[in-house]
Amino acid sequence: MAEEKKVLYSAMQATGVLHIGNYYGALRNWIDLCEEYECFYAVADLHALTVRQDPAALRKSARNVLMMFIAAGLDPEKNCIYFQSHVPAHAELSWIMNCFTYMGELNRMTQFKDKSAKHSDNINAGLFTYPVLMASDILLYQTSVVPVGVDQKQHLEITRDIAERFNSIYGDVFTIPEPYFGKAGARIMSLADPTKKMSKSDENPNGCVYVLDDKDTIIRKFKKAVTDSDTQVVYSDTKPGIMNLIDIYRSATGKTVQEVESEFEGRGYGEFKLAVGETVADSMAPVRARFEELSRDKAYVDSIIKTNGERAAYAAGKTLRKVQKKVGLPERIR
Ligand code: TYM
Image (cartoon, rainbow, N blue to C red):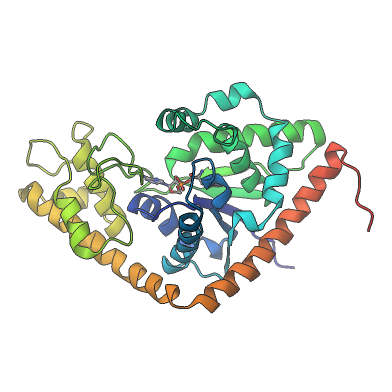
């Protein structure tokens, strides 16, 4: 009998348009993993509710993120791509896991601190328990591997802690997941401030490059990228702007740091920025084209949403029932 594949799980928030940090740091690295793993990728629409959303805009951007997964090259026949909210088991397990998570642990989460500083008028309980829902996402599928950017490291650690705590009480219910960080691109920084990670909420519109930006916009943003006053393209901690551009260029071309440094030796920052901009724009062009095609094919995208949602619900239901039984919830009468 063929050996069962291990499970791999990841997700992206349903808000806004994806940027090249999401793409190079996560999505792009997912494409070939389905050969080795059974892969689940969610559009995390429940997580998006921790910040106040316009309902119509959220619905649209959730669908856009799902289409972007496919446009970037994830084959929906080989990968289970679905909306988190279409699988009620996420919210159900999350409640149970809340009862196995300590306030002190959640208080230490840097994302909670950052987000509550940014949204001081809406520090809701969902923002606080966000990592518990994320842990539930992962644990529901008996996940072994979670490919993410390094900004999610702390959330992976708490997921493991919660799972180990639960297992120590009830036996081996959950697989303990390992994070998997891609090589280049695990942390793409803002072009406007290379000490901060690239993020949709960047105040400076030139800091964040979106996958759906057109070629001219991408090149313009790279031309404006903040660097130092030197001229040499060298990978060094003292040059965070250039380091970031080298990382982006490596992500887009697969070249090593040494190869990039020697390619641009003596050529100055202006030429380097233009080359990075053009390379990124060219690598995004096919993704953009496929995305536009999918936007016109409602029936196909709807069929993926339905069948993959059902597949995810089936897999998640198995773990949820096991957990419900372990903690002592009454059995259902069929
Ligand atoms: P989100 O939506 O912020 O980001 C999605 C993925 O993109 C990566 N990423 C980056 N990588 C490199 N450089 C950047 N500047 C950058 N910005 C974002 C993130 O590391 C992530 O891999 N909480 C998660 C969503 C989530 C999830 C999960 C992830 C919900 N449930 C279960 C994994 C497993 C989040 O907000 O990602």
